Length: 206
Length: 279
Image (tube, rainbow over all chains, first blue to last red; front, side, top):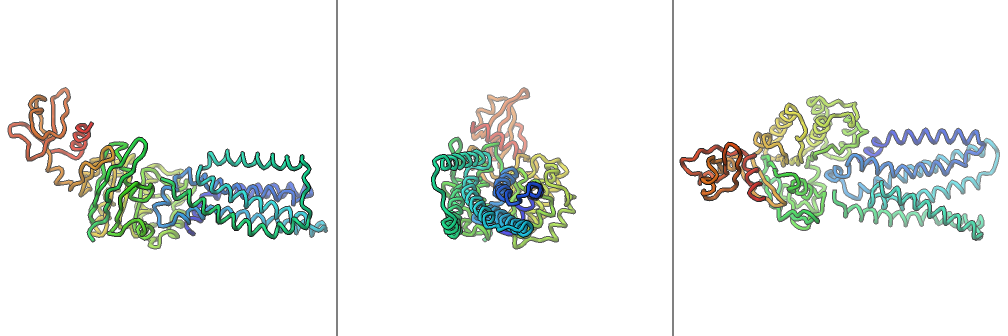
């Protein structure tokens, strides 16, 4: 498993560097704009997009064929995508959290709302990952990109519809309750997503 | 157990192609050449052996062990080179080594370094900057740097210049010095196979036509030359061809008639005549 993780990290070092530069630019923009926390969503989106790059690198090199001749299980091959995707999203979540706390300290404000927003975006990013990985395994990056675009459209239309219908939003207490349940829900979704991806992968011919 | 590899009744049906009941045995200490036209089923058979496709039926045994169920242990002792490099293009040879030592328990770092040096592979260059020959050599170096007992080489020498090919063939012969080792090599370059192989298996349209000892195979057939009408009268003609200089036919040596000029048949002749006959 460690070998597969290293392979992905080596393959994506250029992309990771690019993402780090992008994060630095957004942090700078946040400083100029006076609202560092506003860019938390962008960072998390970038982190969740890493998994698409990870699949793309593999497709380009035909690595999937080769790795299946090596003494590693299909579960490990699929698991690497989850490990890297979740590690990237978690790292950015912690980074955002620290940036918000530092910003709040400097400007002397209570950051509860920003932290909750960061958490909400983190949950959305993990949810996105867990939906996307089985899609990428089954359809490959070309078609998965189209599906990803459709997911964005559906989410946007749903959000727009809800705002137009003036549906009452949950209050802060309800949001906090929901936040406590999210890790359990994501864990269940993770298990389902992994099982589905593995099922798709095991059916594949190389 | 004296068998490095045994394929039993492997079959796979696609919409436009079927692999029919493939049976094959590679003894330890030998090199098996796997020949056939493009699309005859060489890669499909090799992929079925490696578990890269799901066969509809049949069993694979490596060193007497059933592949299904022992897959990970067997793959630890398997070296695979395909017709194209499968390493991510952004990596260099050092990074490939770092990945592989974490994958193979028997990875031999010293041997890897030594082989890189021997094959003059630049350790710092990215794979994408390598020529095709370099990529194939790196794939082979990786296959030889862990405790491989069986090498599966699918068109590993195609597209390489004669000097590189010759050096790879020497490596194959060195590898086979260990009686526990074996090589399964598919190639269109029949002269290479003639040089190094102990056995030849010929596949056509998804069926194994023969799988025999190379020397016996070459002894077994002769090319007879003469007027077409005369050759057509011969019994047991396997294949017949005609050009501006006359006709020639492949016949079993035992039935080569006296009084007609004949030559020894090479693997290429045998493959060509078998192919023509079946069409």
